[in-house]
Length: 447
Ligand SMILES: NC(=O)C1=CN([C@@H]2O[C@H](COP(=O)(O)OP(=O)(O)OC[C@H]3O[C@@H](n4cnc5c(N)ncnc54)[C@H](O)[C@@H]3O)[C@@H](O)[C@H]2O)C=CC1
Ligand SMILES: O=C(O)CCC(=O)C(=O)O
Image 1 (tube, rainbow, N blue to C red):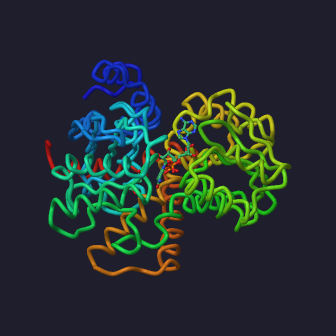
Image 2: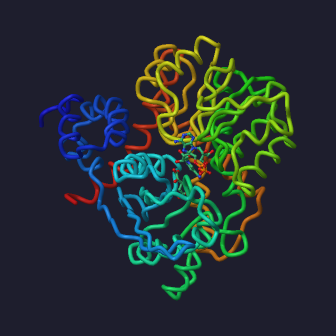
Image 3: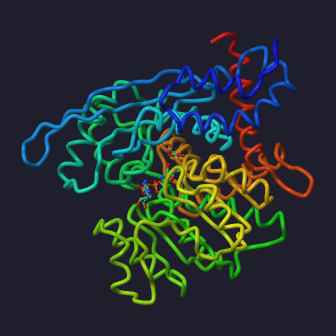
């Protein structure tokens, strides 16, 4: 069998998937680290495992028709990318955002396969969503859209088939609307979605899990260098679910959090965001649903800089937790020049591939999203377990399991990524996530 070569592999992938740059980017980052490993392990090469794992099992697209408050009929497009189900039911979030395209969901679904494998739990990878823009929509419009979306999606999912959850633009409110509609149509009460309300099958600590998990992962990275969070200046981007609970855990572990951000700009509080200020941010973002710019009215010591990201603020640690490609090569260089020693990704693919190269060249601690933010889907996996057992574990019990899982993911990254005096977490996560799925595919034969 001819050895794989990155350039020609990527040319083929781009030809087969035109106009999907985020998908190309996600695959390239993985293929670069995996190809040498596959070439050294002919069983994966001979069985064309990388070719199989970069082609989704199936892509489902559908029309979503709903009515706005003025009585106009609106049409959006919905998708579910069931990327790879080799090691368990498809699992991964739903994103509602005007920027959503099939290419976005393919990048997210591809990353999800490796991430879910890293959690050690039996979950395949998927992602879905719609180009529906929740911004400016009333609660009733959100509800009608969610019901219409589930009316189409329900026939493709199931507790042992495919279990969606939240992502950008889909939180507890939207999951509740969709779960209610599923239950009504399917006439069964099963854990077909995760991130549910605690009153109807949700897991304790799922809301907190992605942000907390990312901080637990960073704690492990720091421990390798006998370091910890105490007194460390930290910048966080985003102010949604992941960012909020990243900030909460960072404060609890002794870091000083200087920033959060939203689509309009970033908020800088030089005195540090404490628990009380975080509650204010949560009120602005989760209840009032307004710009972070409102924060400075109550706290004049802080500034809100429109149209910019927080990477220019001098910091020790950085937690990009908003969206993909929010940190580019120049931002990476600025962070390093300012003394940043660790970047831990709460978001999916927030750093461009060129930014990642800067981190690697400077040998700083860099935790890629598929490892660092896997705590969310891990607790979703445990929500599925609790639903199957028809019981609910305590917050403390789930949080302890989350810490254990993040430790195991870190250890897996070390196993495959440890180099002389440095850990290549990208290589560790990519190979560590790949092996389990690849071995399952080998065992299944030609499928
Ligand atoms: N919710 C979860 O459990 C998990 C989420 N993630 C990833 O974490 C990131 C954030 O997701 P959530 O916090 O759940 O979503 P969210 O909808 O609660 O918050 C998204 C945040 O990102 C900001 N944002 C979105 N698009 C942006 C853009 N184009 N430019 C600048 N800021 C933008 C929003 O203002 C908001 O603060 C995403 O990359 C998501 O895929 C990863 C693992 C699990
Ligand atoms: O909890 C889940 O199933 C989805 C989490 C997710 O979308 C992600 O890890 O990016």
